[in-house]
Amino acid sequence: MLLHFDGQTDGTALDPDYVPDALDAVSADAAACGMIYSFYGRLSVGTTDVELLRSGNLPPTFYCYGTRDPFYDQFLANADAAERAGVSVERLQLDEMPHGFGARGGWITSYDAWLTEIFANQ
Image (cartoon, rainbow, N blue to C red; front, side, top):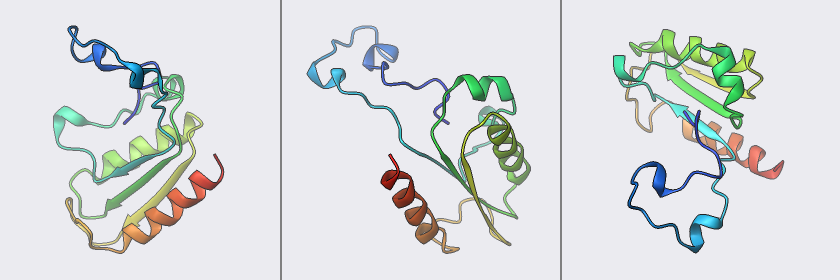
């Protein structure tokens, strides 16, 4: 998720030898976040810390997950916490879909419509 990202972040956060250029002066704030089968095991568990999520000033977030995904409960817990933190959350649950469902399940049309609405209201 975009928890510690803001428009002030540049390449120096990843590489101390990075030399910022003119493009770094352009804000790269995220307008939306898509959490689409995004948890990859124990090293990437979605947080349920409401205060941490609230402090992240997160953009509207779209969650898409399958009911047969082994990380299903993590999606629910993370999305619930994000909502309690005041994040605008859209959920799309794909019945009987596993983790890594790719383009199956019809989610792309729903995600596109959601993004179109988000960008139209920016």
